Every structure is written in structure tokens, then in C-alpha cells.
Amino acid sequence: MNTSFQIWKNNRSIYSKFLQHNSLEHLNKIPTGFNNNLIWNIGHVIVVQQRLVYGLAGLPMNISDELFQKYKPGTKPESDETKETVELFKELLISPIDQTIVDFESGKFQNYNEYTTSKGFRLASAADAITFNNYHEALHLGAMVSLLKFTH
Image (cartoon, rainbow, N blue to C red; front, top):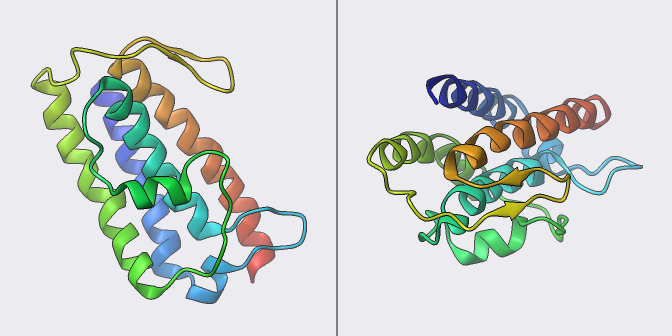
């Protein structure tokens, strides 16, 4: 799992750079032909990781239900986000990593509710979810690179 965790850390570092190097206006912009924006993608990967790893293991997620409801699959931006959200996301991109590693290594994810993703991936364990999460985050990173071309 060390490789999966390292990939996740690298992904999240890249996401953090989007928050650091783009204005609030650019983060919130939904270009023509797109249905979301840079900041929505960041919120989305934060909540999906929590749902895939913690939620499906029957454990409390380390995010608010309000945040989950706003960025879960099937949602889209309803209004512009604030500087406060940017600051929250800077924290939530990084802080769950160490907690997830500790929880995984301590065996906290013993029970896992098997789940098949919308793309047909069968997740039978938290380890599967962590691996799939990297795939999911890479998809959104690609979308964000495309969005970036149209936000400036």
C-alpha cells in the first residue's frame, strides 16, 4: 500500500497547487461546455475518498455531511465558493492522508461493504478503495487540466 499512499500524496500536492496558483474567480469559473469548475473537482475528490474508504467501511467520515452532500457524485456547483472554502480545502486535501494511513495500518477497516463503482470496478476492501481512489483522482486531475485551459 505504500505506493498507493505515495501516489495519493502526490496527487493531493498537485491539487493543492491549483488552490495556491489560481484566483478565486478562476477556481469558480465554469467554462462553456463544462458542467463544473476547478474548486468543485477538488471538493468532489475530498468527499469521494472519505465515502469510498470510511463510509463503505461503516466508519464515520472525517468531513461534514453538508460537505459530502454538496460535492458527492451527481452534484454540480450551485454557487461560487469563498476564500474560506479554499482554505478548508487546502486543509482537507492533506490532513486525511496521515489519518487514513494510520487507520489502515492499525486495521480499522476490517469491515467493508463491497461496492461496484459506476465504472464497473468492484471494491471488496479498503485497500481496493484506496487504489481505486487514485484512479478516480487522476480522472478528475485530467478534467482540471482541461478546465484550466479555459479559465484563464
